[in-house]
Length: 393
Image (cartoon, rainbow, N blue to C red; front, top):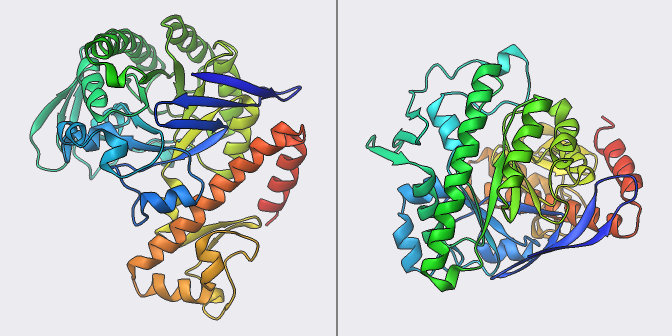
């Protein structure tokens, strides 16, 4: 399923290829998030033109709407959304945290960042067997267990799926992190057993790959323990998740990767800041996903090699040139900053579409460049030059 094509000396960075039923993914690769089997405001065909190699959707949301059996009847996730390529689905574990504990996923120990969302009702309760949810759509009670998550993801038919896990936050105590880690390990065992049962029952999805998820927050001993436990279960790949301090990302990845088998792919869940992407690739991450490029685009924020800018600012009102002249995306080739400034202030849907196209292309192209520079041995020089320019201001 996974082959390494190049290793970069003095780092863990590497290039490789993940083979799936719906095509190959050249790594490292950024995987855009199509949460409900769609990118907001951007067609699947456009995502392919932007260079996306795969898309990731959310099992929890698709379970609620339209229902995993509808997607299965449509021929699986890729067919359902008319996507010509590999797909991922996450397990619903993120919703255990975001809906269950009522806390945001935080990447800082700053006290203001880890306050509860006081206006948000607690919608889920976690126990050792699974999670009882109250639907955020209509309030009805539903139940997720590792077995149910595997059954949902099997019906969705993605090429790469993730074991059911509990995502903690930095607000949780050390004692709770230990308890949660043990629970996630047992859920991983159950996920693997159920996935094996499902794959032997029907051959068309026999190539569906299951990744185990590694938690442990900021604790070195817990991260290493989790990595060893999950690796012992012989998953086909690994997802690295959990809340963590941004400043410690590289350390955490190095702790985890030192305990994982070299020959299997590693996916980092939910990271997309520019320096984080470079640090992840340097540490040996093969794929990663995040909603951020599309989400910030909807608020007017766009990436350039000289840093992130906000097209809402007055300075762009009469700028009759692209966001970034050297960008090869559809938006920059055809529209001026002044027009995009107008669209977003006017509340036009096209603003989100055009800015998302630019941001997704920017990140995809950046990671493609990382892959190229690993290949020619100049990744570290590229990293230093790019980050020096991006964060200069």
